[in-house]
Image 1 (spheres, one colour):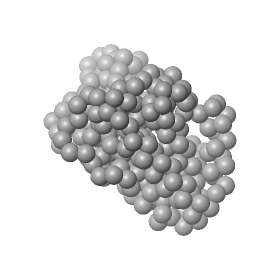
Image 2 (image 1 turned 180 degrees about the vertical axis):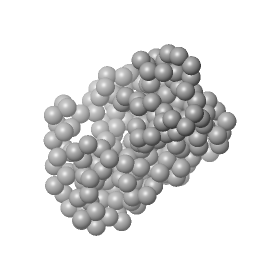
Image 3 (image 1 turned 45 degrees about the vertical axis):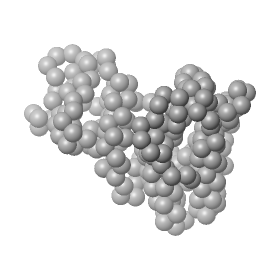
Length: 246
């Protein structure tokens, strides 16, 4: 993978921050998987029904799927992330039968192929619009963000002792802002979440007096992405349970 680009990126060039986060998250995920033995790969993750083998297969498949979007942007030929939801699920199940070494090899290959494809995009192709598996239309410059989010969050899901505090604050702030946006206008109480280490507040709109949470940014990120069950509020009561954010 090539080194991080220098300076702020103009709108039609490679997005420096997300590429940097993608490379860091990829390295962390690969290193964590490479350290697992076969028994550890069989352990369950916090994701219902998934072992670490399922999770590794999913992350590898995600790199291949995002690579399809990169090819779409590079060539202009529509290339969906997946041919179908069934094909995506079948790929994960096949991966869950692989050995740890096979999974690490697949993760490495898919991540390298994605990075090479992104590095080859010319400046004008970063603004080319593609369509995600969820039907969202977005410019190719958002692909590194999608991958950064995937590898960083799922590194936490491996449950090997790596938390959100292992990732840069600028990444966490963007992820938290995105997750907060998904939870706004909910049916529960209003929640004000202040990250004490960056002095920034997000409000989840609801009803009644705000429930106030003051915590480190990494803890708020974990709460909004469903990676922590309980986050204390200023009143001492737990923050309200949230629905899925993705």
